[in-house]
Image (cartoon, rainbow, N blue to C red; front, top):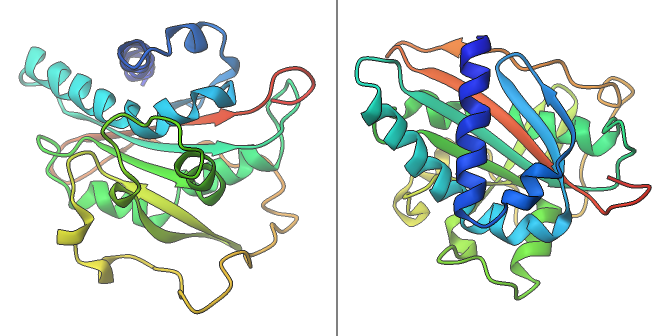
Length: 230
C-alpha cells in the first residue's frame, strides 16, 4: 500500500505538470495520505484546469504507466473535486462532502464495470464546482459541460447532486438508468443537510481489489481561497 500511495503522488504530480499546475502542486495545502489515496488543497484558480484538462492527462499517464510496467496490476483512480472555505487544518464540511462524493456508489460502479485497460479514471465534481467552472467562461481546454453527467451522491444520510466524468466517454451513448439522476422537476438547490454524523471527518477510504485483479485507488482535491480559508 505504501508503494501504491507513492505511485499515486507521482502520477498526480506528472498530470498536474502536463496541465500547467506544477506551481499549485508545490504549494498544496493540508496534504494527507489516506492509506490508499491522497488529498490536498489547491487555489481555486486551478479549477478550470482540474475540471477540464486534468482528467484526460491523468488517464493518459495511467495508461503509460500500465504499458511501462507489463504484468503489474493496472492502477485505477477515483477523483473528487470540491470547493469551499476551510481552515489551515483542512477539516470542515467541504472536506467531509468531498469524501462523500468519492464514496458515491455511482463512482464506484463505473470503475467496477470498466475494463481497467480501457478506463482508469472516473471523476466526480460538486454542483458548485460545475457551476463555477462552466458558467465562468474560462477555458477548460477541449472539455465541454456535456462530458459531465449529473447524478446524486448518496452515502449514509448524505445526498447531493454530483457531476460524473469518464475520460473518453460520450454520455449520449451511456445508459442513464445506471445512475441515480436528480428529478429535473424538483428544485436542485434542495439537498440533504449534513447530519451530525456527516459533520465528522469522513472515514479514510480503503484500497480494494476487484475481480479482474485491478487496484482501484482514489484521491481528492479541494480548492479554496488563500489566507484564513482553504
